[in-house]
Length: 147
Image (cartoon, rainbow, N blue to C red; front, side, top):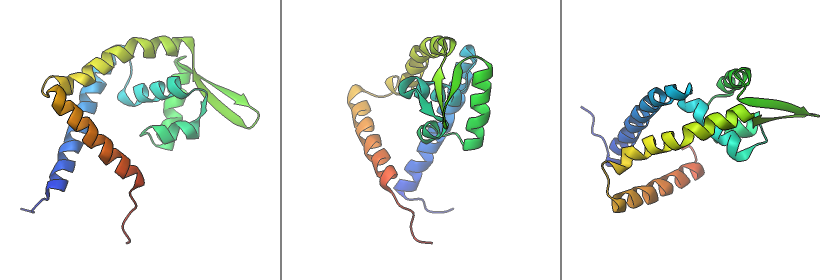
């Protein structure tokens, strides 16, 4: 068996938690006829609209191809609208999309918070938040090692 470092074991745990959380969230969000990826996209559009598809792609973890298909589906369902303004096409929520995300958000946030609130103390959550913020900031600045 390979020897893992504490760093690699921590990364494995984070990946397992993220995977499990996403699977449970996908199940949870079915009651709103949404996936976690769609929920994330709708939240980003609500927060930053109007925005372009490339601006949206920078904010979420969906590939460009996946983004095009998702936006087409969300538009077909009447949740978003895309408007052409000369050379720029912007995306925003429709009234139906706004209602959908407003209905889903409190429940989804409560569900996600429960992963932490059910097992961690207030102090542990603060520590975890501080540590995860530090790691996330470092990941944005991290460069690949030379090949």
